Length: 165
Length: 278
Figure 1 (cartoon, helix red, strand yellow):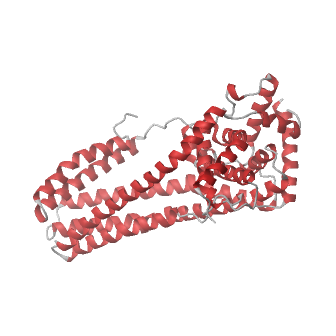
Figure 2 (figure 1 turned 180 degrees about the vertical axis):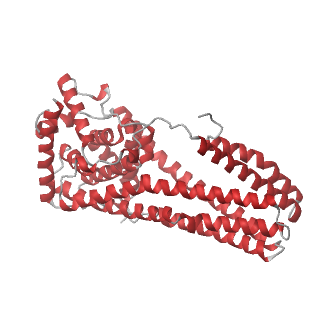
Figure 3 (figure 1 turned 30 degrees about the vertical axis):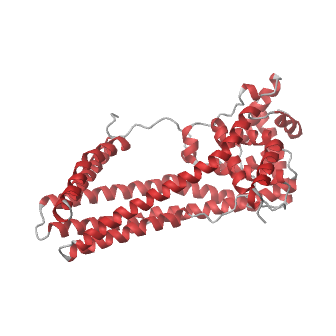
């Protein structure tokens, strides 16, 4: 059954209040310097898709999946990448106060950008605290495959750290 | 940098975007949804009007044709006006309709399907685009000037043929340099996803695909010459069309089209950037 316009607006507000930080981080990784455009695109996709929400997953997980799909599609669209190179640093007003944390976040952003599209998506979802099952559903692979992939990313991170130092 | 668990908590402490900015963006979304619908509507109307104008031009041509050559030429032109948008529309179509219920594997499959169609389209551009347009142009030109075939008509058609060959080469270059490596990259990603391979270093997209070079490449001399020739051809074609209209249709309409020719030429020069120095 199709929802009313007020239900839709209410659900939209709920998604926004629960996922603001998550969408911001996704857009930073995938959108680079164009992150605000990407946030807007994500919100637009969610708004358009809301009438089709069928409560098979929680509203937040459902919206997160749309955000990741939109972000990947956005990055694939090469004309956007042509405009501005990805800015891997976080803007100063959105960084944590500690300087070492800033440095680590910069490193993490660089690491994320060095990963393949699949690993990048898996790691972003993992960092955003999605369960392996939720990640597997979003990626369209088995639960075990995600576990293996995360363990490989962990190994790669260790090597990357030592290379970086 | 430390373990993933530590990174997770650190990652979650960064917001990525300020709350005020986020609120403004979310407010803009609901307004933009309406304006996007308007833009789509305007685009559809513009495309329909353009198709209608060409169709009217073609039908006028057919009804005033003096011989079978220009009759067939105009008929082919009308067919081309229908065929090209249909081919492009079919190629643009996505299999994935619902973004919310799709997973990454579906996305990848859709992207591969889409790219395969694009590659096929560029590979056969001569059959569905260049040849029909060139054939219709040639037949109309020959039909209108029949029974005299001046050296100017021959030169004009020769130049148009040269431009067609250049466009064909450009399309093949784009297919080989951009689309095929991109298709190859997504096929590898799909294999990595299905087999659970690492998919790291070996799966970085080719740099030219993501357009990592942001500096504007200077235009080569050859390309500038081709753009100038294209502009001259376009201007001449519109002027010739105007002249033809003054004779067979309506003198005022013909003069209007004729007077538009230099403006269109100027706009083409600006759009292609051919006026710039290297």
